[in-house]
Length: 99
Image 1 (cartoon, one colour):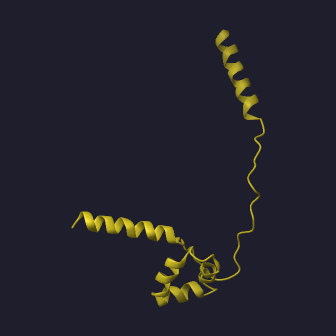
Image 2 (cartoon, one colour; image 1 turned 45 degrees about the vertical axis):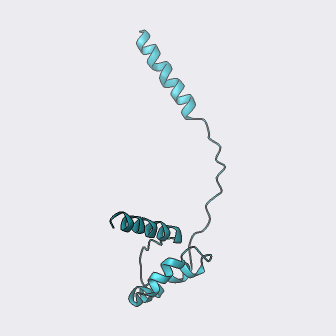
Image 3 (tube, helix red, strand yellow; image 1 turned 45 degrees about the horizontal axis):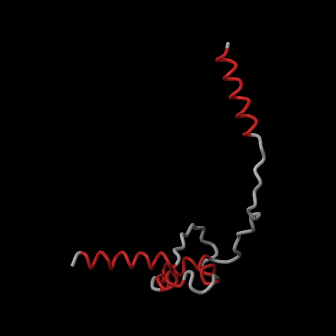
């Protein structure tokens, strides 16, 4: 009988603490829809955020025209400048260590 009482006590304690409301101080989500092309979005961001990616995209005319087309449905993972910097640093370290 004591095992049943213990189990019920544990369940009641879990139910009481699981039902408490947690205060959320996070801001409410904003509309994240961009009315334009993927390329337009990259250009519209603050200077220094996607400059390296834009330079790379500009070197591939087919990709640039694809990103500028409104009718294309796509998911494009935009890499920020910091990621390019880290990648180049790692490549340079590997080149130095491999001779």
